[in-house]
Amino acid sequence: TSPSSHATPHIGARITTIVNAVLTGEPGEAQRKAALNEFLDARKAIRTGINSRTELLFNDQTITRLGANSHFSFNEGTRELSISQGVILLQVPKGSGGATIQTKAVTAAITGTTLLFEVGPKSTTLTVVEGKCFLICNADRLHRWTGLTTGQKVTVPHYAKEVPASITAHLCDLLKNSPMFTG
Image (cartoon, rainbow, N blue to C red; front, top):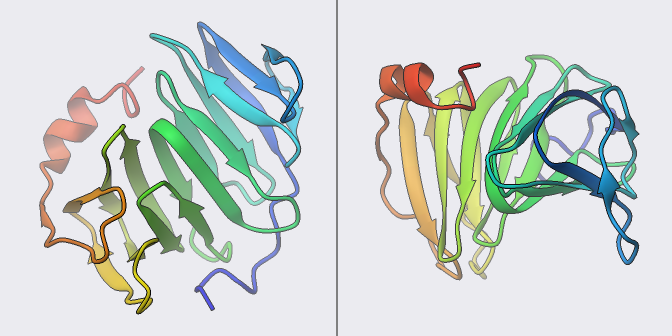
């Protein structure tokens, strides 16, 4: 059981910011241009284009920012989020119950945390901007969780069976220069 399994489920999110090309749609249907203040339920996924970004605000005040070329969705009636490609900044308020977020390489359990995920074609990089999280490789049959705290960064190759050693993130540079925090 992950740390977020007993929290109030995400019932949806409102789009609070749109920069350039942002699309929404249900699986198997044509995607359409997203609208400011549009409500997304779990049946809809969201995608951003080149030089694009968007911000979502969930019912528990969780803020999710998606960078360029990102694909994001969440499961209905749960607090389970998924990003298959791109960059996501996720800020889950303290006391909200947390969430889990899944990429190709890892699943992270979080509560009262700000994380930056970068999902590329060969690996997922996770930076803990504030708080702590627990991380597990999706291919780890032993289900070993690894804890990370503020200022730690780890890059996990897809299909890795264990979380590699973390390094120290340069948070001042990240906060000052990343489009996920500026603008």
